[in-house]
Image 1 (spheres, rainbow, N blue to C red):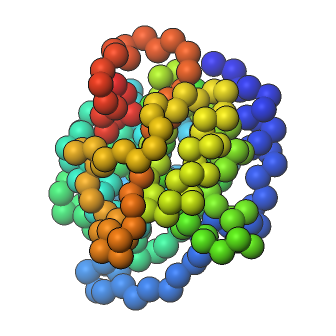
Image 2: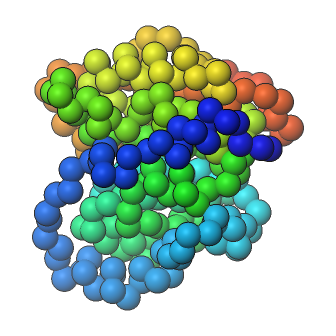
Length: 252
């Protein structure tokens, strides 16, 4: 699969100085700090600038899903344990969350997750080959609610084009947010991207296989409406059978 010019142009146009996240300071307990120091090397995405060899990274030729912004990793752990046949690239910029995920992977002896402490969008842009992902997950990204900050939102037209280029035909982008104006923006940009087909309109109930996240629970307690959005890479997809609802592997 070759990179479409519009997606390549969108990737090249990413402003690395315009972050879609806020760096937060957080303390780590002794257990998490020890897990980071002792076990990170086992699960870490290797440094470098070359495109990742995903089968070599995971030690198998299995579908790979990229999760951008996993927080403290609870959802990542649950979904990885429920679906060991799918490999997960999990990226987040916050060290305490990385430590929590690494500790959980070690405790559960999960081998289908690799962790990047860094910007998931840059990973997608710089080190993921076109057509190589079965799915991309973006759960509850920073909504940047103030008008002057909306340009920092992760899910925009450029991101949609980039994801479409990196997904294999039939691959799934799954976004979730509890900020209704952001959900409307997501729906608009995903519907406008020719490489993606938005699978539904309006509010959709959380699929049973997506665990309730900590941020989601907080939003629900405040009366927020949660929206799940699914957009699938257009084109024929051998092995993708039709079905009523996507599953956690990014396949139907």
